[in-house]
Every structure is written in structure tokens, then in C-alpha cells.
Amino acid sequence: MDCYGLRAVDSSDFVNIDGYVVDRQIVESLDKLKESLSGAGFALRIESAYRPFERQLSIWNRKAKGELKLLNAEGLPMERPTDEEQLMYAILTWSALPGASRHHLGTDLDVVDGNACPEGYEVELTPAECDGLFRPFHEKLSELIGAAESFGFDRVFVPGRGKIQPEKWHIAHLPTSRKYLENFSLSELKALYEKTDIACKSALLDNLETLARDYIYPYFV
Image (cartoon, rainbow, N blue to C red; front, side, top):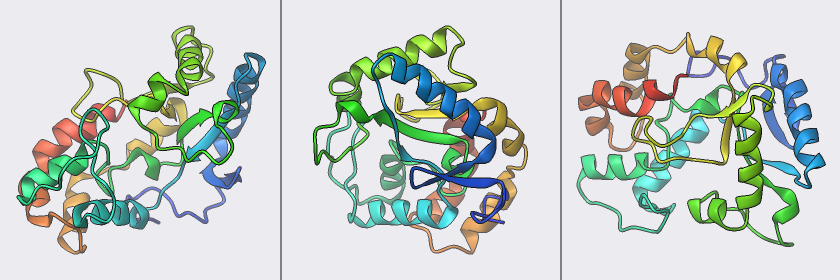
């Protein structure tokens, strides 16, 4: 089991799709969504899927150390705060709490339009891409979701839901993810942080209930 209390990455419940690990229960729906988008001229390409706790922790700690850039709410680079609590909230602008990331589920994907990527282009997953290079793709995806023709996939990081910035590129297969979210325990997450070398530990532990209210539970849909 990983530290999120869900499943291990080598579980028989997981399969490899295009180099990414996903829950096998979403594969049929994903294939149908790909086919639907392909018919409209788009090529759904996965940029991220399952992440174990250790990988999310690495992302968190590297952002805290300045090894990965911090972005503000507009998706632009920002200076690294020196205050621990301010740094914690700066990281949370675009990165989920380790142990509470939906990417631990295996049901959530970051996606782009492969057909729109110039050769050698490095995807950044930013609002600017969603409003520019990948705008037609996301408009079509929104159309399918709005018409209930997205085969169970939906966006969870949307305006007005919690304090995480909207992420059009993040889609979740809700019928599958909901049953795994039942295993989440805030007390277990607190115990995990207490024994883990995680940046901003004091701020995380002091504010965990508030963080859960604003950055975790709103996205358990």
C-alpha cells in the first residue's frame, strides 16, 4: 500500500497506458473519450497520471527548496517566500498536498492535445497553454463534459471550488475515483507528516484542518 492508504503501484489494479500508470477500470472509458476527441481532430495525450506519495513529496520539497519554480495564480514565476507559512501557501497554488493528491488515485489524468504540440515542444500545463495552444482541445472537452458525453470523466479543479487554481488539463474518472476517496483519513495524513521529512512541516501540522477544508475536501467529488 502507498502512504495514501489506497493501493500499491504494482497492484494488479493498475495498467500502463502510453507510459503512464492508471487504474485499469478507467481504460475502457478513456479509450472511448480518445475516440470521440479523435473524431473531432484531437489526439488526447496523457502528461501525468498516477503518482505515488514519494513522487508528490519530491515535487513539494523541490519547490520549497527553489529547485522547481513557483508560479503565482496567473501561472507566472514568483519569488520564493522566506516565511514558512507563506511558502506553504505559495506551493499549494499549483501543487497538491503529498498524501492528498488526486493523482494518488490512478483515476486522474493531466491531458493535452498531442496534435497541437509542435515537434520538440515541452508541455508546461499552464493557464496560458489552455487559453492558447490547447484552447480548441479544451473547448471540445468542455463541450463533451457539458453534454454528459465524456464517459465519466470530468474536471475537478474548477473556479469556485476550494482554493486550488483551476486546472483545465486535469480530468478525473469520477465513478471510479469516488470509492477510493472513502479510504482517506486526515488523522493518518497528520501522522504521516509527523514522521516524514516534508518541507514546511510545522506550518502544515499547525494548519492541517484548515488546509483540508480549503485544499482537500472540496475536490473529493
